[in-house]
Amino acid sequence: MFQTVLKEVVDGTEGGIASLLMDLEGITVDSYSKSDAPFDINIIGAEFSVVLKSIQRAAQMLEAGDAAEVAIQAAKVTTLIRVVGNNYFIAFSLRPDGNLGKARYMLRTRAPLLLKELL
Amino acid sequence: MFQTVLKEVVDGTEGGIASLLMDLEGITVDSYSKSDAPFDINIIGAEFSVVLKSIQRAAQMLEAGDAAEVAIQAAKVTTLIRVVGNNYFIAFSLRPDGNLGKARYMLRTRAPLLLKELL
Image 1 (cartoon, chains in turn yellow, cyan):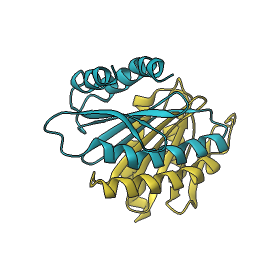
Image 2 (tube, rainbow over the protein chains, first blue to last red):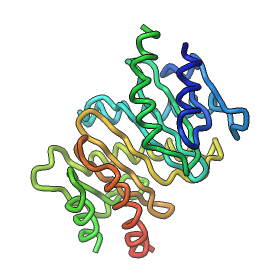
Image 3 (cartoon, rainbow over the protein chains, first blue to last red):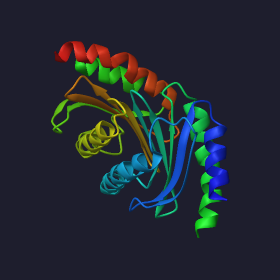
């Protein structure tokens, strides 16, 4: 079921490359990559699990409320991260010219489905 | 001149709250807040300078190219961060219901003006 959702997110978004579901300790639950993906989404997820924790600490200190979504645009890849429940997140990498609006919509609507399975 | 640009970014974006120009060590160059801002943008900037450095390390390790833009959406505030040159960034906080597309446009078009003054 995780695989179905992760694949749907990538294949349903123009420029989608890969997606994964991971816990905040950096352990992958499941992942999906297009066959021509130029990198390993598991490594991206592990790196950004550290970033996400520092963002959550900052948000707590600032009393900004929970950080729900983070978008990181680098020269070669855009990565969108959405928190799923208290302990998991979904990361989705797409090409810099991909459809970021669609990507955000996909994660926002699919996160509740993943959460239901994780509980 | 910095003040003019920072004010223009906030006042020209629906939902804009505050903006600042800071170096990657967390030292503020200049900042602007609407009079009813619910927080101190300098504290937000200092927290996120740490986050930005960890993102840049991750992007380097992943060979993703330089991280140009980061958007962090929390429950009470959205913060958009754009790197300016090698040593500075501009942070812009807006309400969660603010116009994020306009905010991104503002930072993308104003960053070169700020950079020219910083060199």
